[in-house]
Length: 156
Image (cartoon, rainbow, N blue to C red; front, top):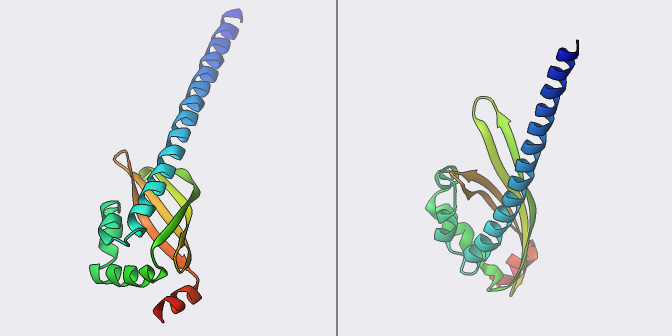
């Protein structure tokens, strides 16, 4: 009986130690994903919207995003968005990353952020969806919300 209790105690101790190590690694990785994804967004958004440059978006885009929109559609959208005028101030982003596991596809790391910026003719809110691929962040979705009055005023 004593030998059995020693084995159970040792096994339990090893399992607890493994769990603590796994949580430590996950916590460390979580902080790295938080910093990395936020830094990526805070670099990408100003680079894209300062001159509303389609190439800046496409250089950071997932293959799925690149194939889901035509060059003409992107140019038209950016031409409309550029009517808010020059970028005055990028106000930063807020968001978080997520990790999910699906047995068919494996682990997926993604992030969602909302960023704000002030332009000469008004404000814009950006919704950015990221995917982590091959150790780097890529843009899966890039959405721009501006007040309709801003764009209407910019057209006149």
